[in-house]
Structures are given as C-alpha cells and as structure tokens.
Length: 372
Figure 1 (tube, rainbow, N blue to C red):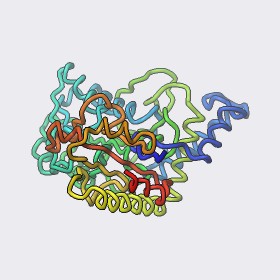
Figure 2: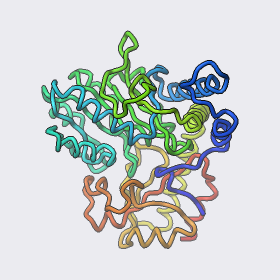
Figure 3: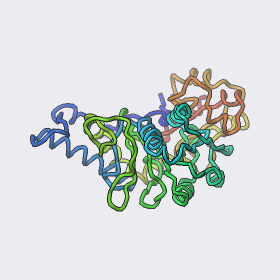
Figure 4: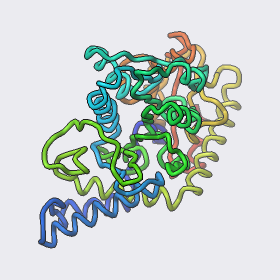
C-alpha cells in the first residue's frame, strides 16, 4: 500500500526509533533527579533534543518548551495569554480556517467573556494582511494564524503578519505544525512571532510530543503567560510534569535529521508532487479540479476534487492500495470547514481528497495512479 496521508502523521524513522528505545530501556532516568548517572544522562538527552529543535526553527534553546504536541501548545498560548493579559483586553483575532485546536479554544474563551474576530480567507485559504491590520483594536491581546494549512497546503504571509503584529504591539502565535521541516523557519528574522506551535509526528518523529516556542526579551526572560499545568516547575514553569524523555529524544533526533536533509527533502517532495499532478492530469483531465494552489504552498500536499465521486466511497475503494484522507485527521467525521471557507459547496467538499507525501516516498511508487 502507498501511504499518502503524511499530513495526518508520518512513520518514525529507524534512527528516531533507535534513539527512543535507548531512553525506554537502559537510560530510563528522570532528568529532574540529581547527582546520579541515570538522571544526568536523561538531562543531557533533553538538552540535546532542545538544541536540535532550536536549530531547526533558528531560536534560542531556552525558548523551546517541550509539550505533548501542537494541540497542547496551542492551548497553552491562547488560554495562557487570555488569562494573563485579560486586564489589558479581551479581544483575540484568528482565521476561519484554523485547526480545531485553535478554533475550539477560541469558542471556549467566548464563553468566558472574550471576543473573537474570525478573518475571512481567499479561495486558497490565505488571509489578506490588510484585513488583519484593520481588525486590530486597542483591546486586542493575541493574533493566532496558522503558517501552512494542513488540508490544502497554502502558506500565509507570516513575515507580513508578524510585522503588523510587531508594529501594533500585539502578541502573534502561529501553528507551524505542517511546515516544520518543509519550510525554512528562521525566527531570528521574524521578531513579530511571539509564539510558535509544532508537533514531532508530522516530520517522522514520535506521537505525543511537540514544542512551543516562546520568545524571550533582551534579558532572556520568556514572554509571560499563565501555564495550563502547575506542579514541579519543569520547562521554565510553563509546562510542569515529568519529562517524557524517550519522546523528547525522538523529537530531537527527527529535528536533527530534518535539518541535515532539508534541501534533499524539499526536492523530493517537489518531485513527488509534480509526478502526481502529471499522472492525475493525464488520467482524469477535466474530471478533476485542484483545491490547492500551484505555488506559495507546502511542498507535497495536493488537495484534489474528483467531480461526481463521493470522497468517502473513493477512499474506501482506494484503501487496499492507497492511504489518503478527506481532510484533517482530527475532525474526520465532519465535512471540511477549510474547504467550505474557501468557497466550495458541500457537494464539492464531499468530492475532495488530500494526498500528502513524505520525502521518503519513492517516485516510482506514485506510478500506482496509472492503475486507477
């Protein structure tokens, strides 16, 4: 079977697995322990992983906070900022095409007296930065806009968005889960990005671990917010709890490999996408339409509409030979809100399928589409 649902999750690389096994077996110490070797070795493993993740996003090491994944990271930021800065304002700005890990948190905060502005998007899912600028008010405390869309792959203009937020002195959070390892992220040159969320399992790392970037000031102090968890004070007091060392070590190894193979991976994803588009066009012609843009997008994500074919029926028939999806894995029971917000009617939404590649997919394997 050809696995083409890498935007949902990816296979763990052998090197990542080996790294994790070490800290699941012989190196089982708690890094919060003191003096003895097992604790020190675990502490070193966490530090090394933090270095690799920081290198991948070009941040300072202490700005990387380990979490259980992007969902937790999103919750920490949005709820944490809302609570800590509620005396300054109760207005939050996001978009209509965010992941549910952002949208549902915003809906929750509305029940607590916060006001949320949901920005419209164009037919490829991008916001107009001018709309953001016009929406910022005196009581706006946070802007949360995803970097790259998980369903159609389109990229928002994060540089311009971050500049606007910096000019208006508003915190900016971006969910970068889908672009991690697939786009050059350099937070040294994006001063307006205050917070960034990501997960390991979208880039051949383990499930159950992610990170939150929190920008620090010139004195090294992290931007303050209210933590979700209170306890032992791990992770600068932002995320208390015993370290999942094997997961963190696996994330670090995946980040190291992604950084090392970045150019090769991007080239591979671009080649795979080009091959798929060629085969789809040859096979189906005007019986298909693309929901994804052809440029300014995450490489390796193709969202295509098979006119007149129900996507669930199609995916079920394809399942013995191709694994794909109809949208976000986190909301698989609902028609895609992303596709509806870019202008598709419900019938068109139900004709749409997402194919998402790994750089480790073989180009030759894509020839299976000739048999459809």
